[in-house]
Amino acid sequence: MRIVFATKNRGKVREVQEKLKEFGIEVVPIDEVAEVEAPEETGETFCENAYQKATYYSEKLGMPVIAEDSGLEVEALGGKPGVYSSRFAGENATDEENNRKLIEELKKRELESSPARYISFFFLAFPDKSGLWSEGEVRGKVVREPRGTGGFGYDPLFIPEGYEKTMAELPLQEKNRISHRGKAVERLASVILKLKKL
Ligand code: ITT
Image (tube, rainbow, N blue to C red; front, side, top):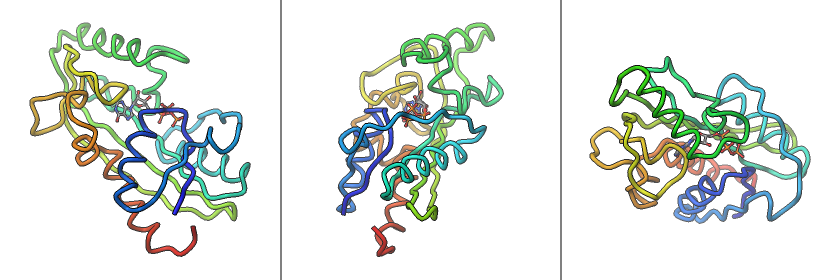
């Protein structure tokens, strides 16, 4: 079974490919299938954005497509950056710039750390406009000292609950086992396998 994953984020592709391999599902990044201009992300929730991305690409391609929207919610920042996680330090910000901004925000508040969680929403859209969604979260805390080179995004600053290491210090399989994305995609996969639609 093969499924197209509409994302420009290579970190997401790696993690989802690895996870869905366990279910015998091959994940094909959208740029290997077609050149389609990315839609604007205008939703105010992860769910809305995942829905928007998946249905947009599924309609363009005329085939089933999965998309994901995810982000980091930091308690000390009232839940920010949330749906704006990839744009925290501005449009087209790099992971390093976003991380620097998060460290600055903690410093401003004279905090060494803050409780936080990652959220992930997946949407699988079919060209007939039907679809399936799933979600996952992982709780933990964000800190001011980056550690590790694995993962992507805020992983060097995020320590999952029950761990001493940051997410960026965990091997890919371990991150996938406990992460928001790993849990969400696993839930979606178990439904996909029951559907005879793909
Ligand atoms: P696509 O929309 O093309 O999928 P994107 O990176 O723009 O790629 P999102 O809009 O869903 O994706 O933004 C997710 C951001 O949230 C991501 O860029 C990171 O900053 C952060 N994030 C989400 N999951 C993460 C993870 O597992 N590790 C680290 N940071 C993560």
